Length: 233
Image 1 (tube, rainbow, N blue to C red):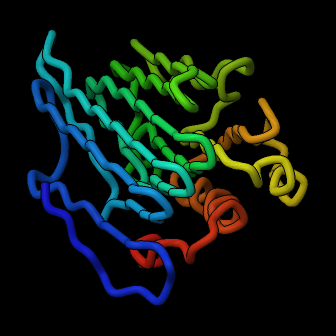
Image 2 (cartoon, rainbow, N blue to C red):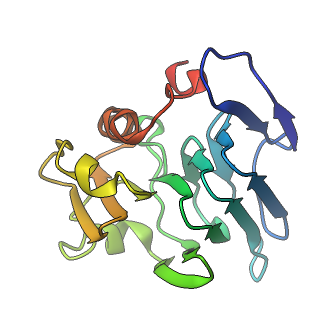
């Protein structure tokens, strides 16, 4: 894993991660631990989409992300999409620790196979757990678990109604309530103001391109800095 620091004309420090291995497969372990000190602003993104490849039975790739923001600090976690291939196995866990007065914007897009390549994901192991603490108190917990035939599960109306891509967006900060009113979302997506300072957005789309078209305006509306340039390439 490498970190690049492009020159940008904004108050935030931009860091772009590059997985030099080209993707994840069973047994791999990827870990991020980032701290924003008092009044700092960090934007973290990835140079390209992450890929979770076919894994041998019983082998699971793991990704652990820990983000910490001190008082007055902000962290924007804006990786590009994670693509799950047939027979991929990936467990992800995100832990976010915010001090009083800190803020975070967390974005995670997922694609179940590339539609343009004719890929269908019928066997997959994917779990995604998020935990957010504010001043030592747990304020948000979320879990996604799709194991088995992803296409069949995503086809269910109560889950994704046939969507092949999805994204979860979480804004934790004092502006959450005001920004919630400014969002314009398609019928396949929705937003919930969980608390005055906690906004959750779910997006569903047919494929990765359609998802990105939905996601970029949402990220721009919730960001205080320009969207990372790698998202525009």
